[in-house]
Image: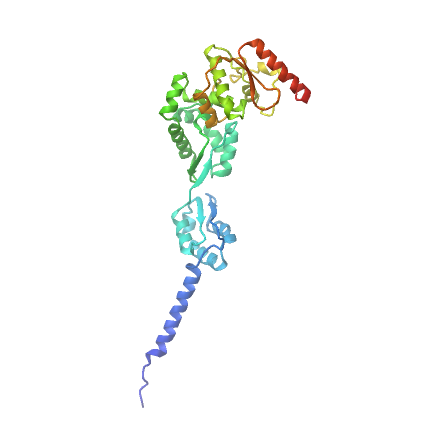
Length: 343
């Protein structure tokens, strides 16, 4: 009986074909582009997320086969046991393996965070909570904590002076302590030698400059006039005159919608009332703008002691050296308010 001849091709060709098929499937699922978007997209993973919720976030931007591959990797790699929070970028040319490694290793993308000129800490907390993983209550409570503020060198009244409105690169999942330490570092960098030297020259600390600047910011949106107003308030402080700044009354009352400060409001019992108290209030009445701070440091030297909003509602002011002249300016402004029915 003749022996059968072993033909390598009989087995080799199918094996090669099978191997190529497997490679093709692996490449199709794991190495083709993950996102169908032509722009970089971002997902946000917080402490409540797991593999399923992460996949749910990715599903709208990924192809079906890519999602199948990624979810398989996540569910069989122990990802649920170590979900790393953060803001993750999904680039158009990312493959499944790239996205998987990024999520698995916590390679998150930083974000640009703008600190606004908020009127109150609670408003700041609300704004930040919309942009960071932090919740507003955590931010507000921390900044109201006297012991914590003291560690930063502030009180709950002066801590608004620590924030310098600007745009900073941060991580979305930054914790409250690291975030506030970062703000303190940025504050110290902002208050360089030149600014500190100018503050010392007018006898004010950085916190006091920010406090006066916050009042000026509320007095006018006209940047060019701010140094004039700063000079007037500094003149008053030198003579130990009350600042008599209407914005501090609004702050004391907690009502920023007031359009006309009435006589009865001027006796409001509050350390922020600059009609009944001389000097600066305990702290800023808002997060002061950089323009406001620099207006104080580079104030215009003059001898005006009074100012009143102009009757043309231009947002600028009439300045006066004497109280008699000031009363004339005030009468014109009051007349204009009455004519417009502003109460």
